Image 1 (cartoon, rainbow, N blue to C red):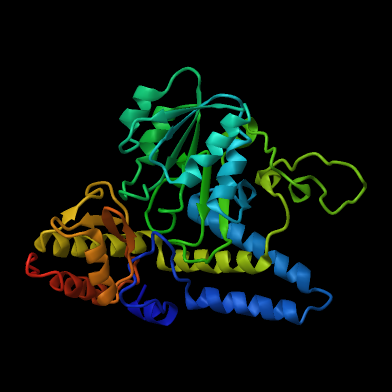
Image 2: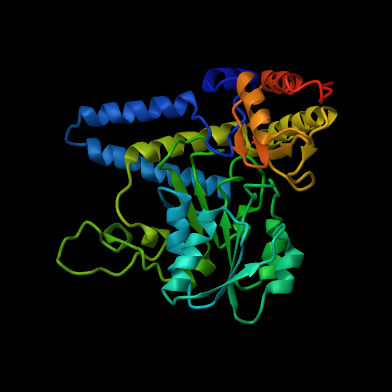
Amino acid sequence: MTDDLWSDQFDESPGYLDFARVGPPSRAVVETSAALLGTLARAGSSTVDELMAWENRAKAAVARLSGATADRVVLVPTTSHGLFQTAFAVPPCEVLVSAAEFPANTYPWARAERAGRLIVRRLPRGPVTPEAVAAAVTGDTGVVSVSAVDFRTGYRADLAALREVVGDRLLVVDGIQGFGVVDEPWAAADVLVCGGQKWLRAGWGTGFAVLSDRALARMDPLISGWTGARDPGVFDDEIHEQAPDAQSWSVSNLSPVTSGALATALELVEEIGPPVIARRVTDRVAELEELLRSAGAEIVSETGRRAGILAFRVPGRATAAVAAALTGAEVTATVRPDEVRLSPHASTGAGAVERVRAALAGLRPRLIVG
């Protein structure tokens, strides 16, 4: 993998450090999306069938990157959509989930509990470690749901160890902050759900779920439509049986344009290689951390098992002032009331570090910027 591909494929601002919020898509994704819309605009007798083939191409790419087979993959428009399907498909049981999860991984369980389908029990605040889960599971626990990477702290869950602790229970993983940017044993998850608009850089409206054999055997996909049934093209005024594989989760046909965007983004991840991406992100995060510490900033995110998220605050300085300094230096970051979150990607260049340095220098005289 050469640096030429980065310059050829990505156009984000040199100071863009907000991939944990949204990842600007590659030129290839933009070109594919435009080309597919153009094809649709000139629609002929075979156009729709040709466009719909992108769904299978996207599934195949997901399967290769996750270690699954394509029949275990279904495309979903958002992480939330996939997690809602999960919550209403699991058998009645107790579900363990951290109260500190991103809301996409709490609301579905809360809504399913309100519907009387399950009981939610919250894990203690803090990282969802194998030890914390082992101490919390009971004989009634049927599901443990966790983020592969915590959106606040960047903590990277130990999926392999969690799989051992969870045992024969279902392990549900929200992969949006990690898939494609950290090298993980994704096959450890019974349900892996991931939106494509962040680190995968596929744009909004893209995503997928990967289901294990255990998940397919135990779950009943209530939120399933005509495209999730056997013989969906046979219109005989009957309700058909659900498909035997992950397609049973399908509600309706998704946009082939977003399928094409997702397939293109995933294939680019494959071409670069998740280990290469992970290494580049790790190096850039470490460089930013060193700069922040030298300037007297306090790192408030995970520093051990972490992915691409680096959160900090500056003692003695209001977060609004830090945010204004970053904006003045043309740095894009996520700003919360008590901290700032930086999240670089593999395409983030050294210029981003220099812009952060300039922003911190603007906070003088209280800060010494090395």
